Image 1 (spheres, one colour):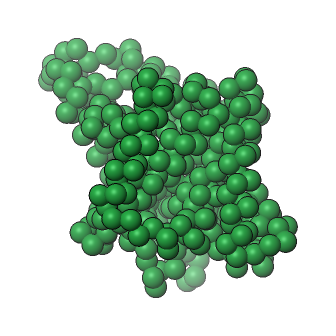
Image 2 (cartoon, rainbow, N blue to C red):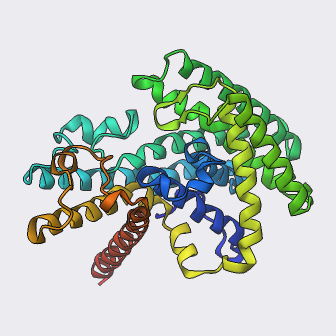
Length: 376
């Protein structure tokens, strides 16, 4: 499984959402490496304020009520597609951390049993290189929680999803308020992450069953409304919102994280619709959209390879004399830009996407070879 969002029926691919997945993954990669390379977008919609909410929105959009007929099967499927790969990649990064430690790179710390088993659930930053994987556990919990609530609700149709949408907004506000009041540490962090993201899942479900069919506004009217909303938010905050989902940090109150996320997601949903006939079937768009899981997990290894290239050029040819080897070995957030040119950030973005895609291709190829041997 290489996709963070729910599988689609391949006979009727939704290319608008393929573009949306690809955009979301680019935003995550840019936000983790070189956000200043795309200043125009960051000046309007801070990536941290919506990109993970966007993935949860997509998962909600593709929720199938038919899954409620076999909750055990749904649970086992999510274990297989979300949790099993998470732990297999975690084991891989334990080996990567051990390998790098032989060269003085201490970013991943020590390899312990706790990091192998407990920390992926608790905070997801255990080996640092795979810190993007923290998102998997909250998504897993949200999907299980949602299907149980859906099963218990005595109503059906649009009314059911309106109730869920309102309920999830309420619990999202409660969760954000808990986080603001210090309940974002240890195991509380798992809870507040889930509660923050739930409104976006509800938004995705409601959009699918009702809002999408009602969305007939012209592009001009649609974007003027959203830009007006965003200007009002920025003016109210007197700047950009401070939203850090990974640590449930919401410095602008419990409502702003939800409002900012809804506005930004609505903006990019329409952008994806506009670009669907232009590049919806583009090979690279589809490659990114179909490999969101591996990109989320492995992007930092792509960044590390770029930094390693600069390090090798420094040692072997004397290039890039201001490269900082101490930070390279100890700080995952150190990024080297020759002559401080932020334009070099595009290299990190490309590597953070392309390297994981080819890693997944290697995994898929190896898996097929092993299965063919067993079949023989």
